[in-house]
Image (cartoon, rainbow, N blue to C red; front, side, top):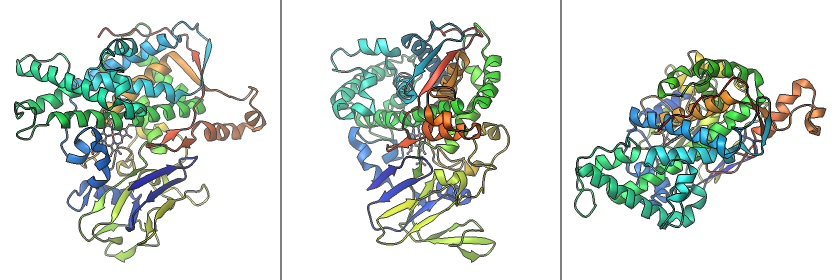
Amino acid sequence: MLVYKQLNTSIISTVAFIDNRTTYSVSSPRACKILNADRRRFQKPVALYEILKVFGSNVVVTEVAPGFSEKVFELVWDTSTWIVLDLFKSEGWDTMAPGEEKEVRNIPEITLKVTLAVLATASFGAPLGPQQDKEATTGHGMSFVEAISLQRIKRADHALRAYMHGMIATRREEIQRGEVSAKHDLLNALVESSVQDTTEEGGAAGGGLSDDELVGNTWIFALAGHETSAHSLAFAIAYLAIHQDKQAWLYEELLDVFPADHTPVYSDYARLPRTLAVIYETLRLHPAVVYIPKYATEDTWLPDEPDNDVGEEEGEGKRVFVPKGTQCGIDTVGLRESALGRRRVEESTLILIIHRSWKDRHPRYWKNPDVFLPERFMEDYDRDAFAPFSAGARGKSCIGRKFSEVENVCVLALLLRHYRILPLSAKGSSDEALDEADDTRVNEVLAERLLATKPGVTLTPKEIGVRLVKRGDGDVRAPML
Ligand code: HEM
């Protein structure tokens, strides 16, 4: 059993393994690449994920991987645009005059709503927008968006199954009648892949997915794609609130791509590299998934960093012996600076603590590793040291990576295009801690507050309070879906 406990800041994380195995927490890019790419020697500990079978078998436990197509990404973009502009209305932000301010006490509450609505709509064809979703509640006791929400998972079992079986039956009929559904969402891809091999009882005869697997996958996508995206987006907003210079740098791009009266289109996505760089830099500093478990299928070796004192000299560099069965997790926070590198926990040790203190770190893979510098992703960088979606390009990593990139870029770009974001308490306010801090310490005080985390399944923001100031450069238009 694996338990995560994140302490107050992302710099210190505690990972507890409630078994007596030797465990490596790997934060060397070279070793992470091997962990991810060499699927014969290192595999995902599927048993750890058995709990995720609550709604049926799924990609995580079965290795069946449905893909997203470009059409899905276009739908993600359009849906995100629609949902963000709808959010401006429902929060009353759209009627603000240029220069007017509004407080948002906790940004993650908003980003969680947005990413859930995008996921439900773009993946499973749920009714678009909060109002339509409410209207679809009839007969199920809760709306679809509520049913796939993690917070309601205990009550949602019955409702989610009912929704999913209904949606699957409708899609299956459409596909079998030869009607190509207008919806190019994930559900279509999943159902289409199952239709050819499906028996009349709804079980899969060949390689296709059974109804239970379809339902299981719906839930796993909701689990994997909701908080990860929402929390990353919230941290990106926090970083921009703290670093006003980077916000100005980003805004230049947004004005260029979204002039007044422009209707956002999917082709805009490729023109927003600065926005994507902000998302990447946020994920480098605050990776949503802090530990990605793998285990060794045979006795083997992993390359070590040359200056690590635990490894053995061997051939061209150092390497570490990894006995069969050892759990070797990718330590995504460690990749950020690799202060303590890999930690080895001996037999019978119950708890592995990765302590990172500001003092004992030294930069290894990134220049100024603790500084928020999105520009670093506009140039060439060490791709193996950037593993928030898992390491290595060819490995089995996050299926939803591009889905989340399109969604987060779209949401962040539209928000920043219309509003300047400031920390809720900035110097000059009645906030004592900030008033007492000298100018050089203000960002540190803000960072301690806005970037703090609390325990959660993914790296979870504690509270991100901001002020939105309406910009005066004209609005962009809502697309017609
Ligand atoms: C910032 C956002 C996200 C981050 C940081 C993230 C990160 C990750 C990581 C680290 C893994 C584990 C990969 C491995 O085991 O090697 C993963 C798996 C997965 N992710 Fe994401 N993810 C994000 C968003 C999403 C979204 C939006 C979706 C779906 C729409 C999604 C769907 C999945 C699925 C289904 C898996 C399991 C893949 C498998 O085990 O075969 N993720 N993600």
